[in-house]
Image 1: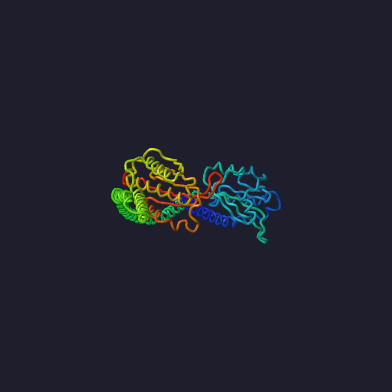
Image 2 (image 1 turned 120 degrees about the horizontal axis):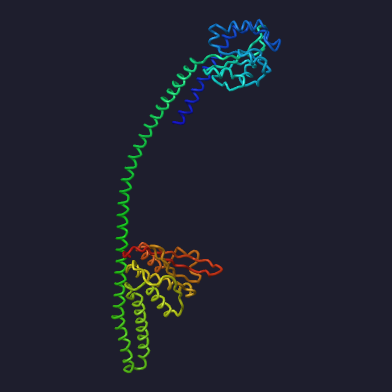
Length: 443
């Protein structure tokens, strides 16, 4: 707004000054023409005015009211020659034709306050007063042809005062208008600022409420995860007790029954031996199945073991059972923030992943890797077998993987099964990836 005020004020004041100077110059030129026209009709007939014309000019400009207003006077020829001047030393001299003189020879009256720095204006500049320099064309009366230019210098004291007043008034008017516009804009921005402040306060309150709600949701999610972890741990303990009961109860009774059958072989005849063999085979098969079920239900005491020992225990049992070698890479030691439920989940994940790798890939190239990224633990079980078909991948993962996915997601983690394409350094296969969030004891 300040820059606009300066620009508009400067432009308006210049237009006013130009208009006033132009109107004053036109009025003065018209007034002077009434005196000069009869005197200057013969200026194009030589390089000097006739003596009669010079005498008439001196009578007009000396000792009259017009002479008091016009302090200097020159008459120019088109070639830049001065044929008459108030300063006799300039008569007959030729000077460059400036813009004002050129415009006057084209029929335009022009005026300028000051501008006395040309070589022919030394006399006027020495007066030390403000002068209005006016160029007025001199025309032939009968043809209207421009035969010369009259240049005269009018005292401009009153004109400069009027221009100063007009300039201040124009600047004041522009400033008032701009002040009004600025005030209106200030009120608009003030009202908008207040609206923004009120909306910001409302949004701040809503954000605080949302933060409280998010904190509550986080607390509830952690409680749900802790509850799911406790339920999973309780379920595993119940399965462990069921496995122990099967091992210590029905399995022992079936073993005792098998021993008693051996003692009865000598008490029966040859025909009954076949029946005893069948009963003994059924008992031994039942005993083996019960022991396998008990072994699958029971877990070692892993709640307090480091995670590398948990993984090594699962891997060693798998290697002993199937006669394969499983590579283990990644973390060593323990992650203290991993709770009992997460450790059980880790055990079941590695166990299920290795079993699936043995079932679908024949145990080829099985690997287990552990990697921690900030608050997340990533565990990957890989193999180099064909894995599931393209149609079956991501659709049917079997009851084992489905239950494992539920277990992992109940603890806030994620489970991903992907097919890996072959590269120059590594053959293709399947990757079973578990990502668990480490929550500082809740898991």
